[in-house]
Amino acid sequence: MIAKSKWLSRVEPRYGSALLDRIGNTPLIRLDSAVRGLPGVTLLAKTEWVNPGGSVKDRAAAAMVRKALADGSLRDGRILLDATSGNTGIAFAMLGAALGFPVVLAMPSNVSPERKRILKAYGARVEWTDPNQGSDGAIRRAREMAASDPELYCYMDQYSNPENWKAHYDTTAPEIWRQTGGSITHFVAGLGTSGTFVGTTRRLRELNPAIQAISMQPDSPFHGLEGLKHMATALVPAIYDPALADRNIEIETEAAYATVKRLAREAGLLVGISAGAAVVACEQIAREEAAAGRIASIVTVLPDSAEKYLNERFWEEA
View (cartoon, helix red, strand yellow):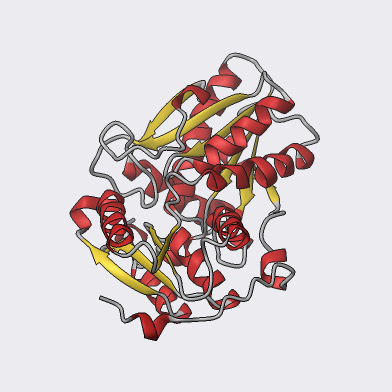
């Protein structure tokens, strides 16, 4: 049990800070090497690792923290608590350090060593959970902690918190629309909390109902796509709306690993594993559109860079 006196801290909601101002408005880059030889198809990707916390999760974390500070659920003497597989936890830890509130996270113990070091650097406390239970085990532990002392913990519950998907409705989708000049025909995103896919799709559909929205997830319960969920066997996030997707593509872990290495060596891009999986899905769509002779502008989100995955063994393989 964490001693309350150790974690009392004065929250200072400095919304105008340079850190918060840097979240979002990420560049949209062309991945020409991924669609080489496919006439009429353009593949574009949001480089979310340029956010200050290094991932797309900065957007949702900032939105959830802003709301909790505004409504008083995160206030002096309370601890931000959530379950995470890594990137949202890092975003919360970063914001806690910048704005002056303590952070406790429930996280599977098999997350990458880099994630563990980053969280320690920010000063977050971590409750390590059974790696065999994945993110679901972390969710269960966070729920137990929140129920044990509701006055101490401000449980963000990113898997159920509507501010998660609203962050992408308000920022990611308008950025994509502006950066493509409205030419986007397909949007592809992975399913973890599902916030990126749900929020971005809802707004893009309002802007152009003809846009095809494709969700992507691992092909089995036991996978190496950190941050993504196999929805058929996982605790399904309350914010997830399967009806939004025109189709869902399941990705093999090995295909994502191979694509991460290929992007590094052929495009000079060091991206994370879920980003590699997103590109695999995009390439499948690109081949289908080119074969049908259609013009397509496919946009995806690259959630983070390879910096948190450089200890993975696949980098050593030929």
